[in-house]
Image (cartoon, rainbow, N blue to C red):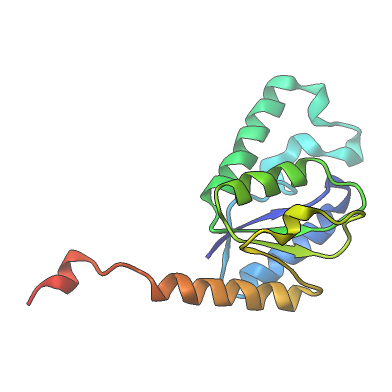
Length: 149
């Protein structure tokens, strides 16, 4: 299953930890915005997306594509979310399943949409993804080769 991990830039270490666990469970991360692909966001060097609007557009498009390419989104809750909530909105507007880890400062009515689940641990994230993947496989349409008699 292809997964996008949304989180606060201030919580990128947690995003990476969650993504590593998801990959270890056999799933694919569609875009690692905290890594080399998202290098414009190197807050440790004082460089942000605001310093280079053209590169910011490129990065925003990469992140958007990461959400679009994903089968599901995992949102790492944090007291200060901005872009991650936009990514969450993109995912649920496309009726993609979303799994929310704790840490959000406020509750949202959107946490209660169909396909959105709240969990407490990374292990529960993996369990939800595995279940979604199983359902996805169960509804796979047979190919033409399988139709041959």
